Length: 97
Image (cartoon, rainbow, N blue to C red; front, side, top):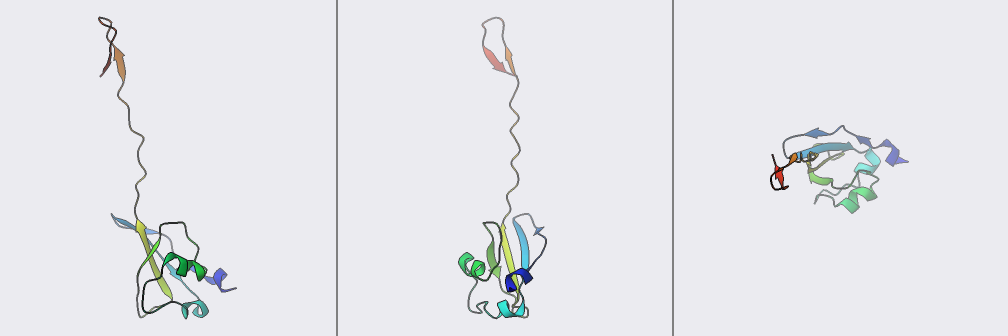
């Protein structure tokens, strides 16, 4: 089955996007459209398996078997640090320090 011959790169990054490329075997590469970037449905129908959010963003004509993907980089949100609360003994009101 050609889908088990699909090669996935490690992810690489810039400040805005996460990237990866996928290398297709020749028998699948002939089904890659030359006229447009593939939709998620199209590349999944070829057997490419990735988590949601990846977009086929560029074609490299000399290597049509290499499919270039990217998705917006999402930084892991830090847990907000809550200010400590102290109690004023004079009027028993919580005050953020």
